[in-house]
Length: 221
Image 1 (cartoon, rainbow, N blue to C red):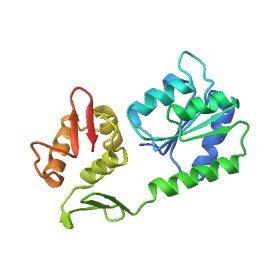
Image 2 (image 1 turned 180 degrees about the vertical axis):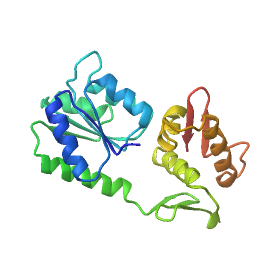
Image 3 (image 1 turned 90 degrees about the vertical axis):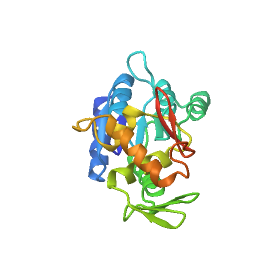
Image 4 (image 1 turned 60 degrees about the vertical axis):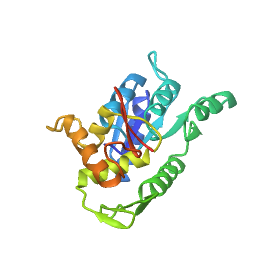
């Protein structure tokens, strides 16, 4: 999973932003159209998206934002030359986390992104009810009891908790945890879900935390 997807139809601006972000040690992918952005996201996922609104083709930035919000809580930062109040409100109403105007100061944008990653992805511990995940040691405690989990099981549970209440498609989960180039098969995801349920659910056969959404994927509650 890349850290950031930059969606920008101006190749020069997009390339420069990617260069600055890579110097900050982020992994970055560039999309020049809305369709490319959605394809990249569905295939690899991302922790954050820097999203332009005015894009070539039938899919604009607003549509990209709406589509992503159907499946995940990935942080979306709109960076657009559309500075009118209506555009800003629309972007925020459909799920963007922030909206900045072009032309932006690159140092301000980088500071915003550093702040987002510090708040959302530098957390040492995640607590949800009886579950406690130590992100440094990749260990899981359930009601104070240490549970043996593999790295993939830990990463899978962490991804689900970070998107609590959102139904994640199987393909998105699989590509985020195993990678689209993995030699593993989709059945691997189902097996890992089964193992996690055995460790965190009071009744694994009737789960209340990791729910199956038939024909789509899984949702954490």
